[in-house]
Structure formats: structure tokens, C-alpha cells
Image 1 (cartoon, rainbow, N blue to C red):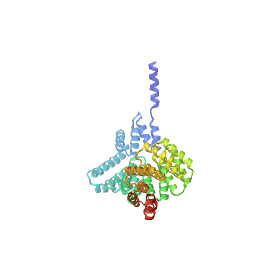
Image 2 (image 1 turned 30 degrees about the vertical axis):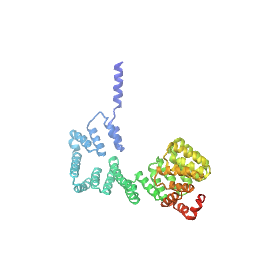
Image 3 (image 1 turned 135 degrees about the vertical axis):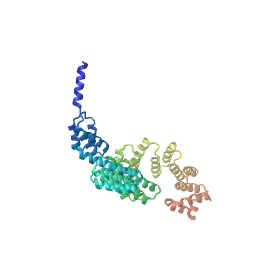
Image 4 (image 1 turned 90 degrees about the vertical axis):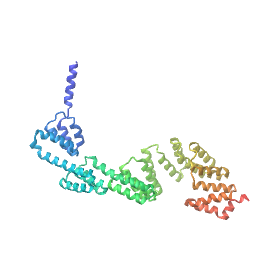
Length: 426
């Protein structure tokens, strides 16, 4: 019985061996990586095997393994492969000399030697790679990318060349991020544009460029760039959401809703897009649907404070002030230092003419976020209601630094208006 099992195993092993014809078929079909993996399983290693292995490794720019296999073929038939062996040896030696010059720190000399190499071996991708690498070491990134692209066009099967292009593109990305964080948007844009020039498929660069146009409120350009990036990275739900926000700013509400829905289809519980939908429904006066989505958001993420804020705003607009206080109180049980919620509660209590509570929550908001203008504004209203005129003027004066609150604060501070709102104090 054991003997029969042994025979069955032997026959199955015999017939499972890869034939050289199979490897050769992959090679001529330009499937060099597959051919490399398969040739390593070929049991019979003869002259044909070594020469085919040499060709495969050469196509993948693995000159060491190419040379090793060609040398074995030469041992079998030196005359047949002499010219190829001589040419490969010369190429390897020339590349070693350039590398030695470069690693010795003579970058300009290495560039000169590499330029001679690409003239001598004009169809060899490694020589262009070597020239590109020398330019990269010299921080001449434009010429580096130019030569890496030539290497890539000559041999698209070696990922190394694209990796080098991506690396240089990311250098510009890092510079752009640094400028962006400093709010130097023009310099940031220059770096991101350069990153995209080096690597046209760098979707991250596109998204960064889109962010700049979004920040400077050029929503048409922002949407255009975001959508180009989305073509390369179509599962980026956050970018779908940003595109939707661009179209809201452009009053293209149907298109905006399409992108919000696309974001949610990619990530069903993405509260960012859900929140934008709820805001859009509120603006379109579909209040009940807006509230329904906001409650869904709270179920998914009870700490999502923006949902409570919008619910408070909706209830205030409907004059349901006690309901607004309920939402605010629920939010504070989760995040006691949420300054926006504290400010909104101050506003609601001021509207209810409960100025002590209004002042309490305004001060808590300012304790959580110093110089928060909306909280200073509510504090001013509270202090007027409590007849603390000096404190009221001080709080309202601090609001004049904020463009959004400047006019309202200035109106309250006009003497006739201030006297009117504090007439109950006489």
C-alpha cells in the first residue's frame, strides 16, 4: 500500500514540474515577474534554462542574477554567448565605476559619466536610472524625474523607477504641507503643483491643491481638482464630502447631495457626510428629515458635538428653547468643556431672560476657549441684562475685533441703543 502511494506521489510530482516552454511563453508575453517566479521551479537546468533565466533577469534589470545565469550558459557554449557576455560585463563594469564616483561624493563627475553611459547604452533603462539618481543626489529634481521617466518608459516592469518619481514628488508634498501650515498658500500651491508635475497620478497632491482652493473660497477650482483626484482614488469618502461642500457653496444642491450620498455609500456610517446632508435639508426647510439624520448621527457617535449644535439651532429657530436646552445639556454630559455648546446655552438663557445662567455659561465657554468672540457677545448681553454696564461694555468691545460680530457689538455700544437695553436698570 505504501509503495502504491509512493508511486502516485512520484507521478504527480513529475507531472507538476514546470516546463521551460511555460516560462518562455510568459517571457514572450512580457510577464517577466511571473516568468521569474516560475523559472525557479524548473527542475531541469540546462543551457536553454540558463539563457532564458538570463533574459528574464535582464528584463527586470537584475544584472547580478542575469550575469550569474549567463556565465553558466557560457560555461556550456562560450562561442554562442560570448558577445552577450562581453557586453553585459562591460555594462556592469561601467555602472560600478559611476557608482564608485557617486559614493565618493563627486556628484558632478558622476553626472558627466552617467551622461556618457546613456549615450553608450541608449536603450538601457538602468543607465538612465543611474543618471537620474545622480541628479537626485544633486537635488536637481526636474532632471532626475526626466531620466527616471525615460527609464520607466524603457522598462515599465521595474517598479523602482516609479518609486523614485514618487519619492521626489513627496519631497515637494512635504514642503507644501509646511507652507500650508504656515498659511502661506501661494508657496504651498507652488510645491503641490510641482509634486503633481513630477507625478501626475499623485492623488494626494491633487487633494492638497483642492484644499488650498477651498480655503481661499475658489469653490469651482476646488471641486474641479478634487474630482480629478477622485478619478485616481475613487474610494476616498472624505473627498466626496469636500466636493459636496464645494457645490453647496456654489448653490448646486442636487450635485452636492449626490456627492454626500456617494461618501456615505463608500462608508455608510460616515457622520461627516451625514451631518452635511442634515445641514442641507435644514437649509431647504426639510426640518424633520434634518432632525432624523442628526439623531442617527448621535446614535452612531454620541460625542459628535456638531449634531447637538445643529439640533439646538433648529429648536431655537422654532422657539423651542427648553428643547434646545435639553440637547445642550445632553451634549455637556458627554463633553463638559464643549465651548460651542456652552456658548449656545448662554444664548438660549439670554433669550429666556435668565441672565444669571446666560453669564454662567458664557464664562464657562470662555474658560474652555479664551477670547472666543461668540461667548464674549453673549456675556455682554448677560451683563446688560444684569445691569453690569461696565462689564457689558468691556465684553462687547472685545467683539469688535471679529468681523462677524463687529457690527452687532458696535450697534449695542451706541449710547442710545445701550441706554435702551439697560433702561430696566434705572
